[in-house]
Amino acid sequence: MAPLNIGIAGAGLLGRLLAWRLAGLGHRVSVFDPAANAAERGAAGWSAAGMLSPWAELECADLAVAELGLRSLELWQQTLARLPGQVHFRREGSLLLAHGADLGAAQRLVGLLQSKAAHPPRALAAAELAALEPAIHGPAHAWMLDGEGQIHTVQAMQALAEGASACGARWHWGRSVRQAGCGVIDGQRYDHVFDVRGVGARPDLAVRGVRGEIVWLHAPGLILRRPLRLLHARLRVYLVPRPDDIIVVGTSEIESEDRSPVSVRTLVGLLSAAHSVLPELAEARLVHSEANLRPALPDNLPLVVHEPGLTRINGLFRHGWLIAPALVDDALRQAGIGAAEEFAA
Image (tube, one colour):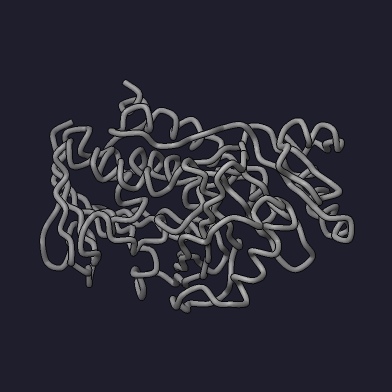
């Protein structure tokens, strides 16, 4: 098709994926974002651990989200093969863990996943768990979720911006978009506009911010190959390994729009839970902490809305990295601008 003049409001994960895909297809792409530059960690995508868990997320999502996640796992592999630089990506499954006292709460979740997931959790004996992850000590119960994966979100955000720039995308940093409408961003005309501003899309969408908090621990010598979720009656704590001896520890969601730094209560709870699973973390060093707001709609499900000259994508909630590639693919197909077939060519 003839090149289009496309405007993108928002340079988070969705904005960068769109910019890379569309610029790669030969379109003229302009991206607007309030961040000062491509490295400023304002968007929610920077603050995610990068768990790609379509089955585990059925706890708070529907089968449509799981299907988007499965497609996205394949699309991520295609995307990363084309982006500049190295982006850490693994697909070796993930583990659900529970201490003995929390077995009842864990069994409720495992039962839910077994009733909904095409590949339900697989119970592991103690010897199987020890063979898979020798560093884990303490949990009395474990289940494997085969086929799930992880991505290094910081590396991916950087690579997407670099890849889009190499294809000709133009970035307008320090530009907060006040109005994104059909073929227009703040009075400037485009053939098509994508509004992916997350929480910034209010009042056009009834989106709220859901606080997420993570800490990075430097643990030299600790070997962990796959993400872990510790199941508890009151909270979910995840631990995700990254290169350079980093373990990311976080909580799934907090209903608050507070952007202040990580609280002492959260920090103590996260570190205690992490240590109860990986005792070697006793000698780890806290090197980074971060809090951010994930955009969520009232039903906590993603939304893609099309009008002539305008596509809005929002409400990725805690599923952003899991479903973003497939959502972008669907949005481009529905807008008649590009699809997976062109991407794979």
